[in-house]
Length: 173
Image 1 (cartoon, rainbow, N blue to C red):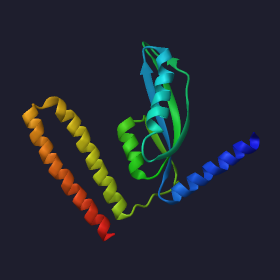
Image 2: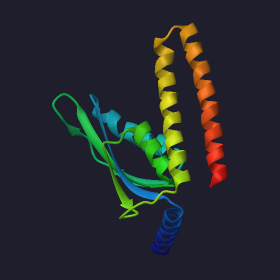
Image 3: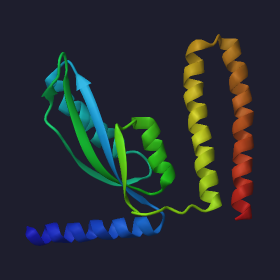
Image 4: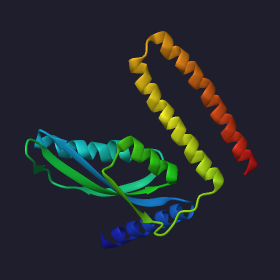
């Protein structure tokens, strides 16, 4: 059994090394959660990590631990530390926006991360797209149907322009 563990560890190290060479990031994420019911916390945290975070595009793997819930004044609280290997900076940014961890620490690369202009351009366009989707969600709940449809038509044109700009940029690199 020990040899299988060592083999698995070597394979994990190799996947990590190759992903980092291709621009990946190894990151520690910290999540916290509160509930009035102690028994709800660990299943909710396991669901967050195993069924949502682990299945997020751009995450190569993640491992971690969940602390036992503790009693606060009127609620219970737990937290988790997760080490995650991301394919690229955008994948990390997406997780930060989507799952709002309480903290983050970049483990590797340890000193600096250099981005090509095209990579930064893609990240910025992805941020704009994510923001657009979030705004769409909010607007769909506050606008009248005819106003919402008008805004959606404007956003469709904006999305098409963004795609053209990204394709133009990729073609010039």
